[in-house]
Image 1: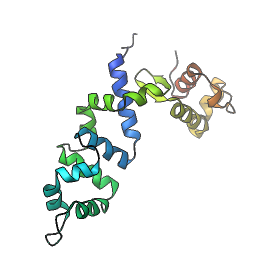
Image 2: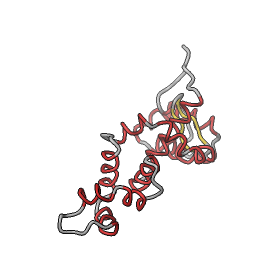
Image 3: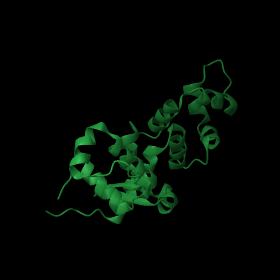
Image 4: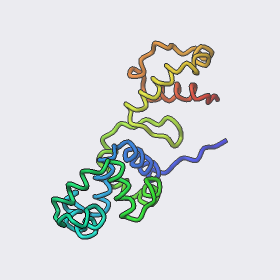
Length: 179
């Protein structure tokens, strides 16, 4: 049985998607503003003042950048994110990520290059800290207790002390993958 090896391009897109998904709502909002070629929120508000004023202000409020910014700040982070996704014509994050993999790859290019990535499955790449945390969780999971005993894994092992291949092996074993 042979595995399909993902191309470097697909790997980079997968890593960018991972980093985007890890952002909190405000980070995703900033990323979406960059996607729309806006320098920041003020640039967006100034460019779309009439449109935003119609949506966010009552008819009795003056249509100023300050009032729109105040109304924007009154939205929860997920509401701001949803607003921008709809503004740019996307129904949700999945759709945005699916159609903008190249943008995300370029947006996170420097960060992707700085991170030490660990492959835990043929298509799954994690920053080393996240891979260590995942293996640590798997070792602590009571559902894996029997498997840990059968395989003979030392439960007291510190995943931080493992190299990438050892992390991969333990992850495979605890995921039930054997050769």
